[in-house]
Amino acid sequence: MPNILDGRELSKKIKERIKKEIELFERKPRIDFLYFEDDKSTEVYFTRAKKQAESIGIIASLHNLPINTSEKDFLTLIEYLNNEKETSGIMIQMPLPKHINKKNVYETISPKKDVDSISHINLGKIFIGGSNLAPCTAKSAFALIEESGIQIEGSNAVVVGRSEIVGKPLAHLLLQKSATVTIAHSKTKNLKDICRNADILCVSIGQSEFITGEYIKEGAVVIDIGINVLDDGSLKGDVNFEEASKAASYITPVPNGVGSVTVAILFENLIYLHKNLH
Ligand code: NDP
Image 1 (cartoon, protein in one colour):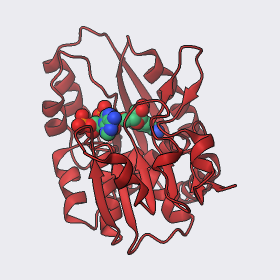
Image 2 (cartoon, rainbow, N blue to C red):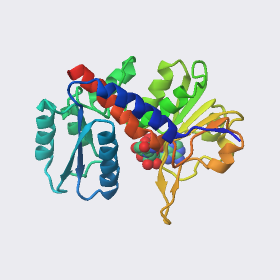
Image 3 (tube, rainbow, N blue to C red):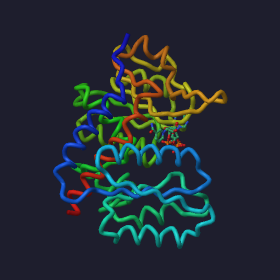
């Protein structure tokens, strides 16, 4: 059996560390969550995140916006929060409603308050290297690898999926630690062979159990970022856990893997921004 990389354990560890740090702050950090009323799953996620924030001394404010909020009004709210002294971080629901251009949002949110590191400036800093911020999901996947003491330097890492907020930043985080990184996507040829060469295989494609046992090298570290909700309401990753477990040395489960770390990493990013602001 492989070692299970349990996201709940890492999340607890990060939050305990942050709680101790916040106790020493004169001014409590505040995070503002922005989302639209039609998105029930984001509402559940942000409401839970608010509760967790408050349990470690973070002030959290939910902004549940009418679905017909215009792009202009949405950007005005972001600008207002950019200038609001009490706010240290702004977290925005993704994907946005179709009538709001995400590029305009990425350009409007202040890099100083961009807690999910989606602004062009913060994404660019990941490319240059040495940034403490990264989009929460990518950083969570990376943290699970790094905190387990897995050898990254010199490893062959394959990241399947090239989205701006998961695949690309994760690939750069691994590159910074001197992995040899391959980024695969829907047009990649011989995906199976490429994956079978991976010492560290990270998958973020949004297709339930697409990666079967045949894609896994003996002893590989398998990081499954996908969250797919099946018709019966159960959650599956992008990797077939049972098959992959036969070859993997380390593997993340779904649920209780990467997705369980993202809120703690969000708070870690918030504390970093808060310390820079004050
Ligand atoms: P996107 O849809 O933005 O990107 C998917 C990527 O996967 C694209 O680059 C696409 O390639 C690639 N892809 C799709 N199908 C294949 C295939 N058959 N073979 C190879 N590559 C493929 O998704 P996200 O990155 O935002 O999310 C991916 C998954 O991660 C989803 O299941 C999502 O629910 C989950 N997720 C989990 C989070 C968590 O907290 N754990 C948070 C965010 C997302 P191309 O670019 O060529 O189209």
